[in-house]
Image 1: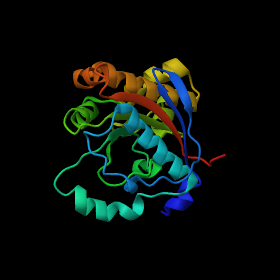
Image 2 (image 1 turned 180 degrees about the horizontal axis):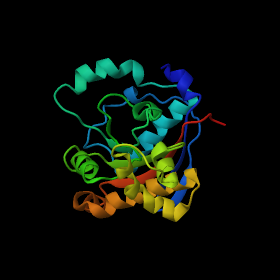
Image 3 (image 1 turned 60 degrees about the horizontal axis):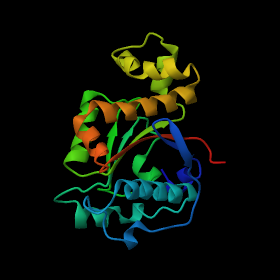
Length: 226
């Protein structure tokens, strides 16, 4: 995969908190992450952590990535003995959603959890609690994406092999809310899973209440940028 080719095809569309869309992310100029100190857990506010993700996404959309060439050096210098991610992302397992590339972040910066349909299972919640409560992440982003197969399968409710249908109950509330439109249901699912994280986890809810953590929903378009 060539990052600059992919960056011309993929863009990040919307972010929302509590169902309110906060805006579009568009292309912008390069701002090198590595001109600043490494983003340790004690440095960023939730707002600054979110802005770091958005700034990286702008570089990704513009095809002006800064992180990839630095991965090995940063790994050797800063992440051998510990990790200090500033953000956590709950993403779908879809192979078309390269989380670190989407936000132009390198090794050690994003605590990534992935599962089909970006659903908040107990295991996922436990992982994100660790990220926020132990590692000190400042923002959790639940990121749905265009063409999500798990959401589509839930809408269709067809018989499937193995345990794939175990995903359906987690996503069905979004389908009930948004109807059979795939994009609408995917966005609703991201918002519902983000709300679940805020409500079901005492660790996460306490950090949100103290304004030490932000939990947001997002939607990523794997199609061509306009």
